[in-house]
Image 1 (cartoon, rainbow, N blue to C red):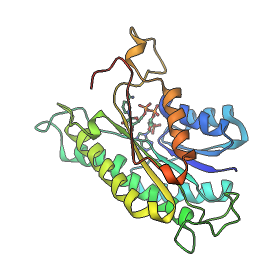
Image 2 (spheres, rainbow, N blue to C red):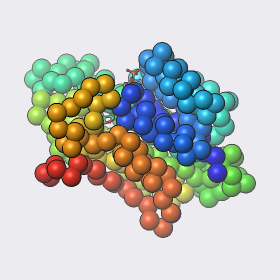
Image 3 (cartoon, rainbow, N blue to C red):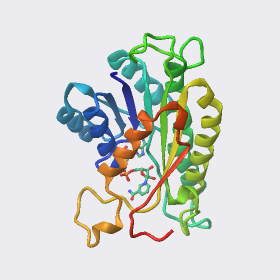
Image 4 (tube, helix red, strand yellow):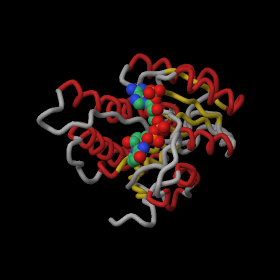
Length: 245
Ligand SMILES: NC(=O)c1ccc[n+]([C@@H]2O[C@H](COP(=O)([O-])OP(=O)(O)OC[C@H]3O[C@@H](n4cnc5c(N)ncnc54)[C@H](OP(=O)(O)O)[C@@H]3O)[C@@H](O)[C@H]2O)c1
């Protein structure tokens, strides 16, 4: 089955690993981010199954246009990864209201809007996601999967990161609410708590075992897409084996 996937917020770290894994599994993957040169070069590397869609997720009209382009090029969306986050690394006395709101716009509001767009496709006309299409994933209404990328700060507010932590909590609440609303209608909504640092793509690290391997995280994301309906995950937490928790 060929699925259409959107990764909202693709950079050279985990976003790229997810995109590569999904393409390897036969998906058509739309890459959304602001840095056009990067997503264009990744799309060129991935071939016809990838589409670069330059998008600033804080701008509602750009999200709307991006999903229109994805549908035009690849058809209805089956899988969405709400992946971007933002936030000034400042404490509650220093963060400005604008910075605080921006973190929420990138994470929670964009996550909601991208999900609304994807749900239109996943639920289709009958709105129950049980398969008004022919079952090959090219029609609307076959259900789908929405994954939200979380962090340690999604469950434990981080010292000196008021905007990021509150936005990550908001994303988790959104994911949990949507899972309850849309699970019974055939859409699997999952939240992934990444409890540790992701191994950086651009530099060697002293103790690699202390980091999560982005390709291994991407394996888990693909598993969420493939999970049987009788055993859907709402929240998955991942951490390196050496990490205390
Ligand atoms: N890195 C870590 O150690 C770590 C740890 C735990 C959790 N996480 C979570 O993992 C996710 C990111 O993974 P990653 O760090 O490996 O990053 P990544 O996938 O390499 O890159 C994410 C991309 O999101 C894009 N983005 C940010 N704001 C955007 C906006 N307004 N509009 C469109 N795209 C936007 C950025 O690209 P542009 O600048 O080109 O827009 C960025 O490169 C986040 O949800 C983060 O909270 C990361």
